Length: 148
Image 1 (cartoon, rainbow, N blue to C red):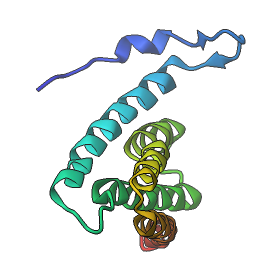
Image 2: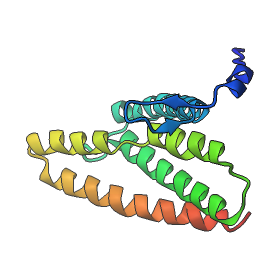
Image 3: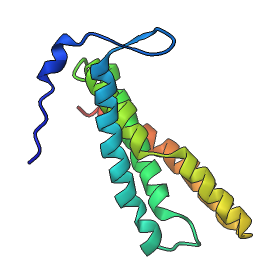
């Protein structure tokens, strides 16, 4: 098992970017690690696009966006109600993991491909399902956090 020791980062206070705004290096690393995990997870779930065909809708991307919406809704709900999610955990989970996992750009490019192939009904169905189910998922995630 790969073990990474970040204890040496305790002495690194800030990483400065071009506009001279201080950004904590630890947060950048947490977001990057979360983004890596989210992106790799998205890759595996999106493989469903190759194995499941429902009216040419990219099912894997649809699932990724619904799961990601539920997860971020849940995390927002938890963060609203308790201090259990520190700033670092929110950076890792919400910005990194959820940001890397969900993808609006893939959703829009897949719709463009469907449109180019003349599948107007699939574009409308995919867009409608994505927006409706995504909103329901984020709401259910938030409500589920109330059960904690």
